[in-house]
Length: 451
View 1 (cartoon, rainbow, N blue to C red):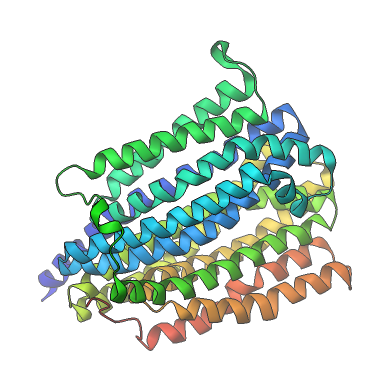
View 2: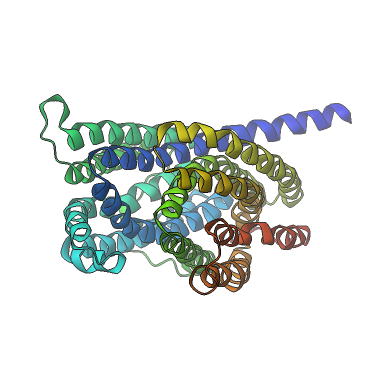
């Protein structure tokens, strides 16, 4: 019995490592692009960094729609792949591709034809608006392509090729960072283009990523899009897709708008708070790659088992991930403490901002435990079985009825110290833990979604 158990442990660990590690790497590489953009532009001029940070909020909004679409394709795709039904998997791919095309077109049209209107939403400073327009007119073209490459990469992940997606993404990221240096500062005889250079680097990296994704998809054992199928109506599958997509989109928008409002609250608490908050955000995004990789990778292997009809095995995998999520939370908490003194070596802050940063990092370390547990359970395990509505409910209650109102009152009415307001913005993840654990134990997520 003991030997059988060890075999099962080995099988689970090997599947999880093969799937989660490449996804973690891919997330980390994407987070590094944002860091490199900020550091390089901030080196030239503070206004460049500020304007591009505001301009990329449009990409942030686009990503909320893309994330819901790509996650839905991963949920259904993992189950159909587990079942061995490639025909339905291809239909899921076609639906994803069409939705991503529409999302990309809307973002592209806004950035290229109405950049001034979009920049006015985020700032009334003319100097920032003009810089933002320069950036968006070029970057808008890359937003058109992002959805297409994301839909290819999502299908590769669920069809047991997460290594390939990590390689393609990593190549695109390294290319983006190198070209950032070349075009922003004018290295190797290229013209120094500043903000336009950052946008051009992003566009070239996106083109390379899409070409590689399409090229690789024609290899054996990969799934490529059958364009004849794109215009076929897949009524039943589309309904299944929308059942996953709408709650995920609702959750994504609730989360995204909530997060953007947190940034706005910190911006109203003075320059020290805004500076400390942006560094906290960069460190948080880097450390979150760990729990996001575990959530995505774990969700895919649970989905494979559920789609194959092995509900008991899917449940058992879920139970192991449940405990791993708490371990991951502990590691993330420790990393947060370790990163604080390191981050201060690279960035010049006023003494007030430095003191605030230390206080915020302590709050963030506790928050990371909640973030890890909730990511793995909600975005990994619950999503694998199509239980996507819970995320929307929990965000509505914990973020919109608790964290956002408290932080808003603390900022505008009670004038609380910045660290207290910051703690309010972290309440949602910590407050959710008991509720998420209770929901997990109901095992509503143990479901085969395939037809």
